[in-house]
Image (cartoon, rainbow, N blue to C red):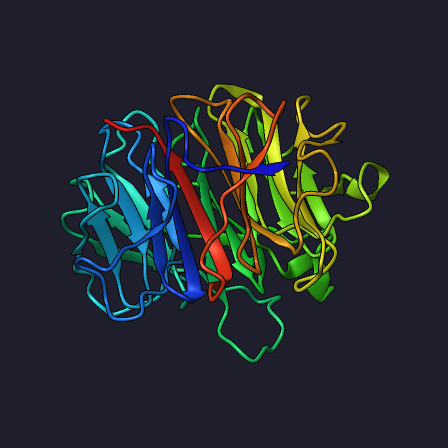
Length: 332
């Protein structure tokens, strides 16, 4: 791996819980701190690109959702009925102007007009959730591509939940997960090809029956680090998944694992020793899936633009830490 002087053809955005929000454009050899339209000291936990409108991006900040129409240069606050920390977004297959978001109070909001207005449609409750120092929150949402009314939520710390009516009602699906806190501490969820995948402290788990039963995929068979902070499906191949990895919540090792067979086997996609702390986000460019970038908790951004053949590091300012979200898109 080597440092790089500039990005290739991609735009990279990185959000933190304490340290700012950053953007790096093609040809630039430095990061620009993004503040236009955002709250003071923005804490950006969720990032998403609209699949139908190039240049339209969404950020989840400490008080509300935000929208950018110029690939992340300027932002505007979107009104939701109650100020909330926004953690994640999901788009309805076939009609991506229907958008869902999950909050730090386990509320689900829906927009039917591309994010211009929002309504709260449900609050997820998990009877299995243990008492923690913070409220249970929705870290990730995923929609079944073939059955858009079927949705899944990753709850920290409350396990997995499923909706069969487009997010209006939810039931927890924690058979084999509860009551163990390590298994209920979910960080990501992905539905693809009739299977559902979740990531937690023990690694990545899979269900082949809509979450009624779960199996541990035992990432430790393939990597010495298997604590997982998230999971993503490749936009060009529903059989390929990427999983964030680390040793613990705060460790000095991080990386990305990839499976090309729906989780049966995994490989260290990042060449095995690139991250200096736990990986907290992985992003695949929707229009160029050979571009894969990941961010580590302590401030690294590492990426490949040739499907993993070579890697480069894009150092953030030394003062930046608590990096938690990343997005990679192509210019309009």
